[in-house]
Length: 408
Image (cartoon, rainbow, N blue to C red; front, top):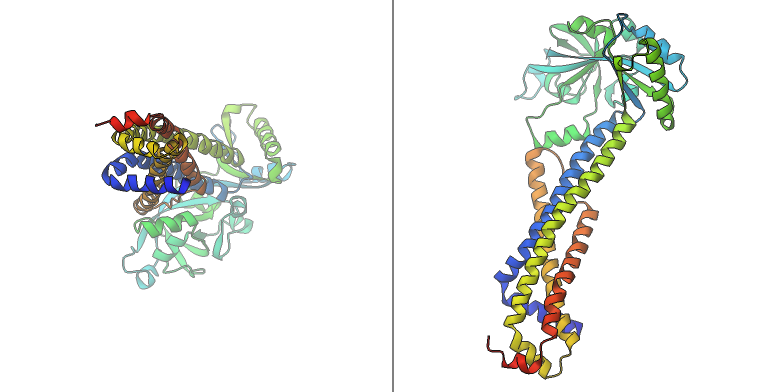
């Protein structure tokens, strides 16, 4: 019975191709809205979360806005952390923009590269690479000796090494920042996000460099000997709350119990917040897309009611030769479900194509989540059943004699 009902449903759908496609259109749009919106939200949040996680989930970032007339020194920071219980490493941080130049660029770099580039330089301590989890492809990160000796050494990004230095194997060569020579002692690995963006956008370049904090003070005018920003790592990832509380206590003691004189950002809390935001955003977008699917379901019910009216004599003939009420109802219900599922499959395929196109133009990789696809299929099936029951029941309740008399 099911097999015959399925065949008849397929035949009925194929008999009115344009009307069937227009009926599916509501489901197609609803499924595309669900899968595309949720996939973009997940992809964007995942990119931000990866960036946060790449800096380590045991990192505390501090900004000092008021030092109470007493500058915070590097030695003071090191002593503070060395005498603490829950804190491990500390590094001052400061940023500046410089112009980079290398005599190697014209000889070795690609033809479309420039001999100079605007670079964001970050001044740090020797522990910064360990604290934030920077990955070195070649060479090493500078150490405490380089910081204490104000050494002109630099760790540069993969893009900067390729375009200005001629390749990642440039350790030992010299690069100039604002005309001052720095020895390249390390080249960072190209991050996954940077690589993806470079594949999809030839104009994107990640030009960054890290130098000792003491060296940056001589390179950029707006960096002083007073530390206003630094990062700290916790001794144990499982004791981030204790580490944050201890650091807050130490800073309150140092800054005259003024909690407004500084701010502390907990990387693990940021990661948790992002996860919560992602969940809320997914539910919100899923709800909006779900409304589109409901509208598509109403379209299916309307067309199925029209189909029932048009096929009244067919129903009368089938009942006259012995078809039961259940058989008639099953046929129309299967037809509604097939329309809904076909629209769902077309919507999923269209969503996959659209996400690829968006990825090419945005420089970010988006993928269809298996969970979202499964929800789309289940929801579309439920829509087909929910909005197909009434037309199917109406068809099944028709009386044979009245149906046979129907002229239409």
